[in-house]
Amino acid sequence: ITNVGAAQENTGSTVDVYLSTPLVNDNDLPRIRESVKNATPALGMLEVQITQNKGADIGQLLQQMQQAPHRVYDTILKIHTKSSHAIRDDILHQLCGSAEIAQKIIASFAANPALGLAGADGWLAWKGMPRGTPHFDGCLWDPNEQKNMKKIWSLLSPGTPMPPKDAWAAAVSSFWWSRGS
Image 1 (cartoon, helix red, strand yellow):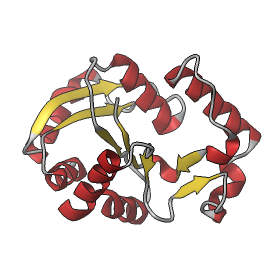
Image 2 (cartoon, rainbow, N blue to C red):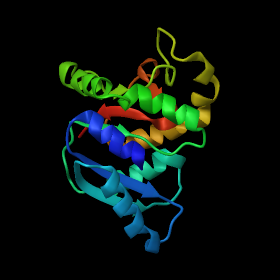
Image 3 (cartoon, one colour):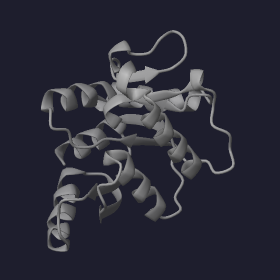
Image 4 (cartoon, rainbow, N blue to C red):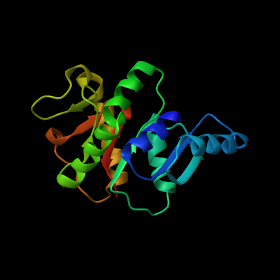
């Protein structure tokens, strides 16, 4: 929860927080809400949800998107817990470890209308050239993952053809900035 507050401070603006957890009961929600409020000085809206652990972290995000009020965001920072604190700290530092980093990424979306995703160096993979992070290539693009990607695409962009494979990109470990709604 302290990471949420630090990320918010580095954006330099008020943030809405959508927090999900599959591992608590309803009695824990007031304590979680209070912790987030205390850690996030410029908190806008706070939505804490118990979600099913379907599809790991991306499944929880999709559940949140379906339940979220109709709000418009320029950018979205997606973070989550990680069993490896070293990996989590590395990715968070690269995405929102300082005001300069976070604000530069946010500004890049405004400056580049074609930009859809910004991830941490060493934690991105893509299909086209130049070749993406090679050590993620095997499991990330296997047939089952491609099937999952197509299913998620159909939920997020119904009726819109999926981009060609050489345009596919993924933020490995599911931490990223993306263009908002």
